[in-house]
Length: 128
Image 1: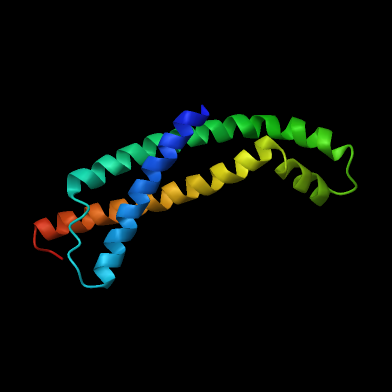
Image 2: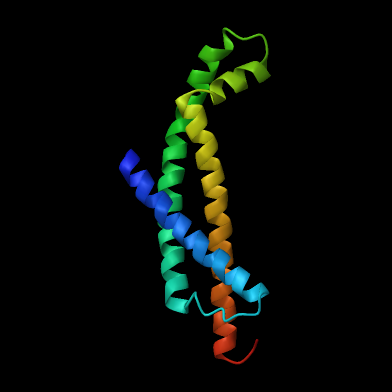
């Protein structure tokens, strides 16, 4: 993924995170929590799913190279742990770490949005 596209994606994901966090903070303070409407929640889930797919694809490409790169690094190391640490210092290693955390974050946000959609649906039928 080009650097410019990553920056835009990161900004948008941060914006979604901020809105979700704002809603949680508003809830705990007893304020109105109508920030995330059903349509907006659904749209966010769709966007997050698309970015999840993009990040997964990028991570997949890195994972395909991992065994070859790691094996080369291992030749000059005394232990597996040292090889892992050296690999993590490479560009692919650093990107791999970042992508794994981004994917976990997106999974959690998608789950939270799903819960919010369920609640909104239940509220619409006066079941909550």
